[in-house]
Image (cartoon, rainbow, N blue to C red; front, side, top):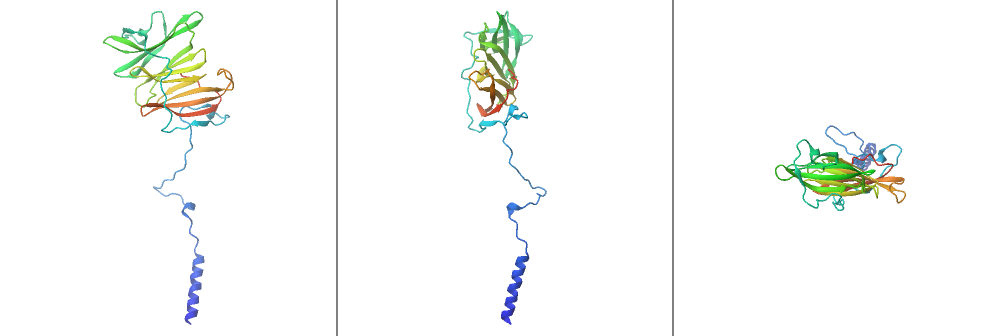
Length: 270
């Protein structure tokens, strides 16, 4: 009788075990999160900065060339177009506006202020006919003694043989504060866009040379585009553009992202 009782107990235990549903692994749990619970999903990696042609319908996606990371290459002002004047130049402080600092006989194409106190910068882009072309001058001024301004940076093409156009724009490009001045020189010989970024107290902090390029200065970053032509001539049939995103991180100007995209570069701000 004892043996029969043990056998019955074993059979009951086996049947009970088989009747239980199997426990679902934690990774297979499909129960929706309750109140207070948070679910996360990976975010797609996208290029920062202004939209590139690759985001326009009908064009292929861009491919990253240089990822954004703390070790992004640093950039410098080497090769800058603007530089200190050969001799000291001073003018009476402007009364009516920035155009008061123009050179006699030259026409102010554009002017404005940048930098930050206590040494704000005033910049002037001027033109003057030189035969069938225009000569260009760019001067960056700052306060000197009471009632006077001094020229701290200059660039000139009086005969109109170097640049077909010179344009400027101002934006808080640097996260460290103030307004930075971006000057774009459109070179005749190479058809490149040479960029100088100027900051207080009146120095070029960044220079770029973009083939058949474009640039846009915006809060926190500078976006630049350079052609990747199918031939050796940048003006001939570019098949793609290299989009560069430049930022000031930890006081250093860095190329944080570069992407290639088919199509044309956007309109340049300078």
